[in-house]
Structures are given as C-alpha cells and as structure tokens.
Length: 228
Image (cartoon, rainbow, N blue to C red; front, side, top):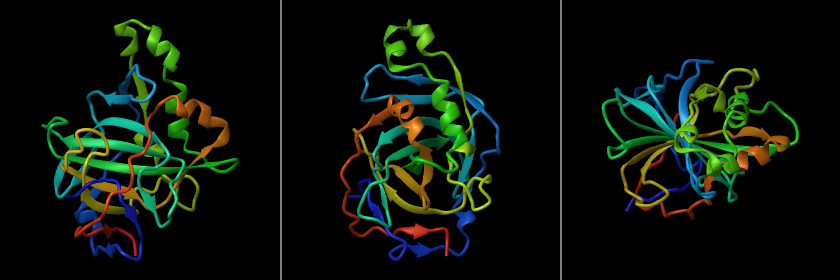
C-alpha cells in the first residue's frame, strides 16, 4: 500500500545530492498557456489544459501539465500537525501519454494572509474563470471557453519577492487522493507555502475541487527532499 496524502517532515526526509537529476520544473517564467474549466458540481472541477503544454522533466523523461485543481484545506501536512488553507495540484502525464498512465503531481500549499505578496498567477487565473452559477447556465460550448494560466506564477516566492521557488520540494511515491486512488503517482510537494490574500478567498473557493482526504500511513516508503 502506498496511498496519499501523507505528513511530510524535514527531519524524516532524506536530502538528495543532485535533486535536478530527479526533477526539473521547466515552466517558462511569465508564459501563459490555455485551457478550460470543466465541471458543474460545486464539489468537483478541473482546469484542463490544451496544447502546447507546459513541461517538466522527471527521471530524464518529459511530462506535460494537463490538469489543475484546488482543494480547500491542504491534503499534505508539511512540518506541522495542521493543514494549510488550500492545496493546488498540477497533474502531469508523459508527453505521449494520457491520464491512464503514471502521473507526476506537483502540490503547492497556500496560506491565507491579510497582507503579503500573494501569487499573481492564482489571482489572475481565478478572476478569468466563469462563476459556478455561469457554469450551470452556460451552453456546452460556452462552458469550454478557453482561459489563460501562467503556471510559474502559482509557486511560493523566493526571498527576493519576485522569483518563483521551483526548487524546494519533498518527493515520495503515492496515489491519487480521490477515486480510484490508483497507486501510480510520483508526488512532489513544495516545501514552502504560497500566500493567498483574504480578499481573494471568496473567488478561490468557488473552484475548490473537494474536501481533503485523510492522511495515510507512510508504511515503508522513503521520502526525499531537494533542500539541505
């Protein structure tokens, strides 16, 4: 059994000597891509990307970003016994593959804050999407209207306040956190939280996919980290 999510702790994760040999996040800075928000049910929805896809490299193999979804309350816990306010999942499949193939998922935890450098990409992304009411009322063709997404702008920021932190993460092998819970996911969860302003959470929560799944036992799995 290797189910997800799990609690991640720095002390119990092994540091990698050359983390970029395992994962390289090759999202171009400030480059936008296109996709559509698919979903009618208030508890479930995904943003599905279209070609050309943003790419990452995992174990020297390219994977494309095909789906993004949002959880209200984080599923993973990072160095704490409490969840973050949100968790966003970037779902990747092999370049020539589909969602039936093994997946690489990047998890970004978000904390609500009254002030601070919120993630511009998240705010811009949410503002451009149709509301849940509109999704229920629109025709099929309108529901699938395309909207831009800039993946690099979703990540926590480095101390300079402008550069996205794409390098600091935990990694383990696990599963989907919703049905069918298939154990074919290589997880990378960012070490640091990103910020979302309190003034933006009403818009964000329209697209929260579902409640978080309970933490699962680590069992004999090994967790590694990219940072010292």
